[in-house]
Length: 281
Figure (cartoon, rainbow, N blue to C red):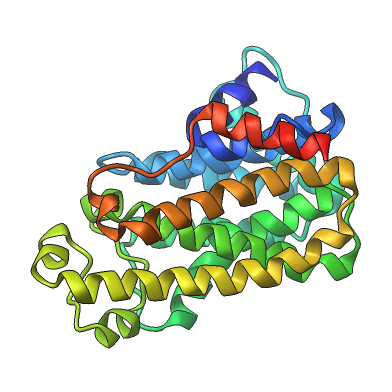
């Protein structure tokens, strides 16, 4: 599991240090899931994007999950791609995931490669479904939650992904991406969310950012209603992650232009301290 931990930790401070508080049996499978997610995402987010590696990974997935004899046992000699494909097929089979969830995730990654643009909020929600909501659905299955919890797990993924869009504006500008719908930009008279535009139209940019944070607030408030379906022992990692995302949102709300100065992320000690306080409650 060292390889999976390394991949996961490199990709996300908040998710990784929140997830370490899951019981070992669940934690290992969470790490397996995220090893695949992070590797696929990394191929798309490198500069320049490694399109060939992503397409190869997708082809491997397509062949592996359709093969009933595919062996999911990992070996030290496996390449990274071989290992993460074995991991995703393992968790898909163990928890009976809908394979369409994985396809939707890969479709969203492909949209990044294609530099897809988003005209309406429904277009952006399509992307968030594949890039984050299906991960919430998979996590709900790994945690053994009832089906009535799935809609809340989906919304949790959406809420967190939207904070990522807000937090990562500068990084996405560098990658020539914008996930905010054109309809939202138009409301505030913004042509884009570049630093130059924000400086030229500071009030409009601030209003735009506060409006986007309200979307997060609304989706997170609905997702919070699903906490009742999560056993207390399993609730701590998720509540920790939510707390950190709320903190990120509040930090940006106080100073929207901070997104151009740095990536707003909680430190490891902040995440672990929050988890500790939740455990003691």
